[in-house]
Figure 1 (cartoon, helix red, strand yellow):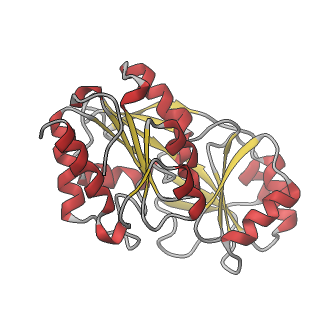
Figure 2 (cartoon, rainbow, N blue to C red; figure 1 turned 45 degrees about the vertical axis):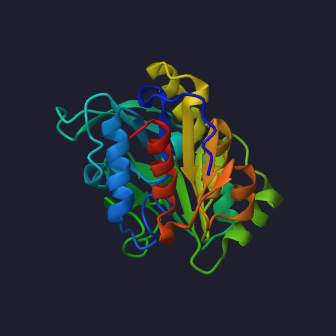
Figure 3 (tube, rainbow, N blue to C red; figure 1 turned 90 degrees about the vertical axis):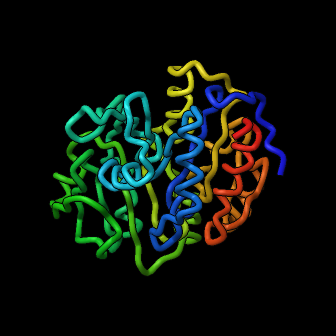
Length: 279
């Protein structure tokens, strides 16, 4: 594997990592090899960031496991709608650097007409979700409040999630293509899971803001991910890496495809980066 980023010094690197299916195995497990590689790259002086579709509430425990909650660190949550400035001196270990919202009513109205039995969740940042009905155990972290439609869509939102246990990701892709969605961005998960975010917002857009803030050159960016919500991030990075189990459309946009998450493919990438910077 040849890492084609330009810089050879760790302080010139920004490495953005998806969580589920990249850092974490599909059962939520963090392998010792991956955790050790991430900690070593961070200790070497590279900027190591998580960029995830997860909410703030479900991202923080992973950041703690990886020892990434430190002054000067950043994390991107909710597919780019939330950027956290990490700081252990803050009560919760972070402050919200940026939160981008949208009016969920038009898109939710259209989608609930198409999928009247789908479950809907609207993120409440740092707390949990307002939901149309309880989601299955373990699918959402934080508090869940069952609310009526008006409460669900009555306030600006950072992210809205649709879940159809009886459907598939292909069903969601076909539906979105058929009806179109205006004024929002969207990403379809590996199951029948659809995330809506503010239009123009993605992991890539949030990472670009952080890159500029830190003064890191574009050629020093690396990103690793495995799903459709990582497409923009992999295109954004100077060196984009797809996990081995990623769908073909994700693999196509990557500069390199590493081993699957079950084989610690992320660790392979980081170990090559460490070798490049002489660690």
